[in-house]
Amino acid sequence: MSETTQREAMTRLAKSMFERGLTFGSSGNISVRLDDGWLMTPTGSTLGTLDPARISKLDEDGTHVAGDKPTKESFLHRVMYDQRPGTGAVVHLHSTHSVAVSCLADIDPKNVLPPITAYYVMKIGTLPLVPYYPPGDLNLAKAVEEMASNHHAVLLANHGPVVAGRSLEDAVYATEELEETAKLFLLLKNKETRFLTEAQISDLGKRF
Image (tube, rainbow, N blue to C red; front, side):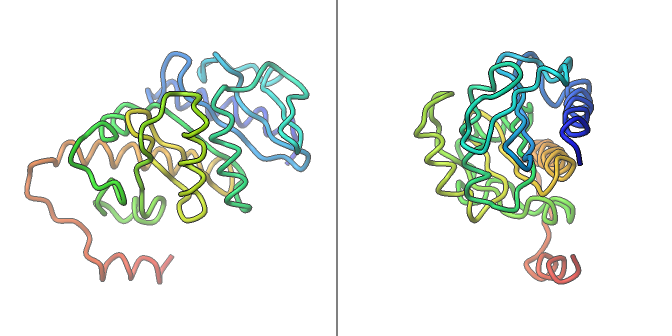
């Protein structure tokens, strides 16, 4: 896929997420791996009105070589790519329900959301909570790095999800599934709920 096509896909999917309320203002950022580096959304930009020509380009060393200055959270993307060689794209949002769950005091930091649906298990699986650090803090990158080799999706405490995928579409769809599951989790909280069993989860792994 050409760089021009990737830029257009980033703009189209970013606009779709913005218009559906998955991100807002200038929050959230996405990136795509190229043969010679990465494309990333610019710092301070809104996902609703990206200009394909102004999307940031970084070379293989992470040096900014074209477009506007990249997101200040580019390090979150870089550690996911470094720890997961098969990653083709990364999505980081401040989506409402996922952030709400990340603020709860009684969630399991090793696996934040229970297996509510088959599609959540298939697209996310296990979701660990990364301890809180201020935005831009390099300790946040180190914390994500420690989890990224074993998890393609993590939830940053009081912040939001970071999700890696083989393609931009995979990363976006998985992020959307995570957000919808977080919404279901909040709706079902304090209600007697039937989660998927270990046997059902194992069967999904065999089937898919």
